[in-house]
Amino acid sequence: MNGKIYNLIDYLNTSTNSLVVGRKYGKITRKLMNLNKLDKTTDTIDIIFPDTIFMVSPSFFLGMFEDSFILLGKEKFLKKYNIVCTLFIKESLYSAINRAIK
Image (cartoon, rainbow, N blue to C red; front, side, top):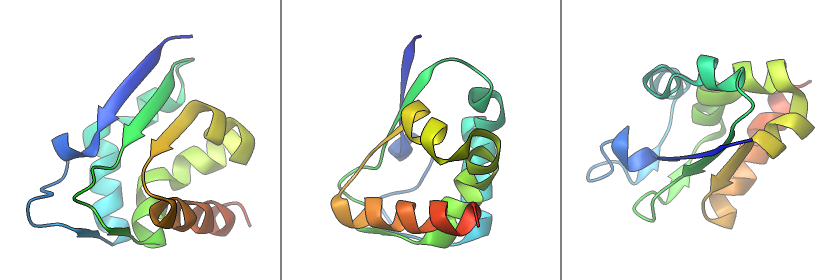
């Protein structure tokens, strides 16, 4: 397994977005990062949320990762994608995972 690192600073305008919200914005980010393709690889993926982002809504995570949650399931998703972020943002991610898999 190979590891890949993606920094959201490369996909978001974090100079103006300390809050990242909205399912639509998450879907746009998903497309930019080509997550549909990454979901099907054996690579592990680190996704870094830079310190300039203070809050990410569950709706953004749903837009970005809902297809991944459904395809991989919770356990495989958490093994494949290492989300590097604050504890506050990680709690939002877990909320989104729980909403997606119900």
